[in-house]
Amino acid sequence: MKKISICVSFLFLNILHVSCSLVPQNNDLVDQVCKKTPYYDLCISTLQSNPQAKNTDTKGIAFIMVNDIVSNVSGTVNFIEGLMKNTKDKVLEQNLQYCDERYIPLVKTILPHAADAVNKNRFQFANYTMIFALSEIDDCNKKFTNSTSLPLSDRNSIIQKMLDVASAILTLLLNG
Image (cartoon, rainbow, N blue to C red; front, side, top):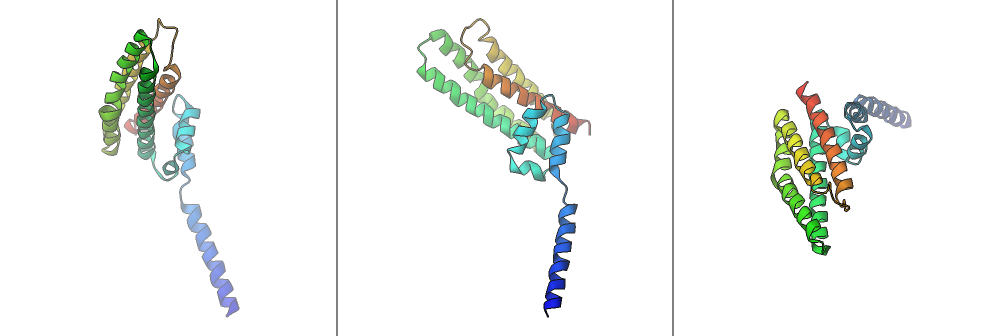
């Protein structure tokens, strides 16, 4: 009886080993996709921080990236609103208000539509929304070009890079 139990255990371990080796290692896919983007390190760090990236395809990777952008833009909206509450500088407050008015539609409408478009294989539309979001952030940045205060430059830079990464991934999907 012990021999049968040992044989069954051995057989089970072999089957488990073979089945595990047949599961695709999406760390390779994430790496391959990120190598085709302009900001490899940002792409890798963003996707490796999301456990779903390990079990998805390129479309799923694009979806994860777009959702991460929504989260970052949403965080920036909160940051902007906090700065507006705490500043006494009227020009800074006006510039922040201008940026807030650009970012809120991105969070509430534009970028969620992009995520939905990825799910529906409408990669061209999703890519268009990345370009639109880049222009809105660029407009915000321009409000601070003659200013000594650059409260959003780091946040905007990261979001712009993430948008470039997402756009590159969407272009991969468009090109098949």
